[in-house]
Length: 152
Image 1 (cartoon, rainbow, N blue to C red):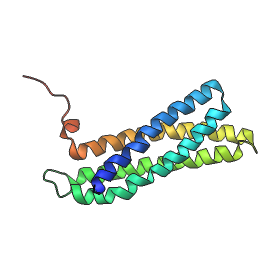
Image 2: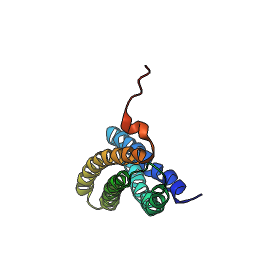
Image 3: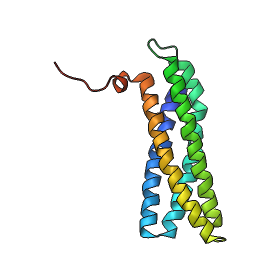
Image 4: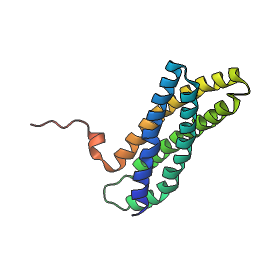
């Protein structure tokens, strides 16, 4: 197993995890459940930490994939940029989640405000996740860029 394998394996953890955590967060808000809210906060923190793995393995994957014929270095750099934007969004959501947990017993009003900001940041970050995933796929999957196949 090389860095490219590790990058492909680890990048799906924060991508899928963010979507599931947003869903859990929305359920917590809908049910007005402080317990589910705390669980979603811990998941945001976990996903922010898991977001480190694709960043750490990205350079090694870049070094391997750039040697393949037909691979555009510009596509790799574009994906890398969106990967970092996604990562910073995960970190922001994780920090807000830690703040929400910290203030939940001390200053509930502040915790509720942080909860709203956390959800907004997570939803915006999901757009960054989508863009990061699409640009990553474009590095090695030409069918993404070329669009729909039409059978003549």
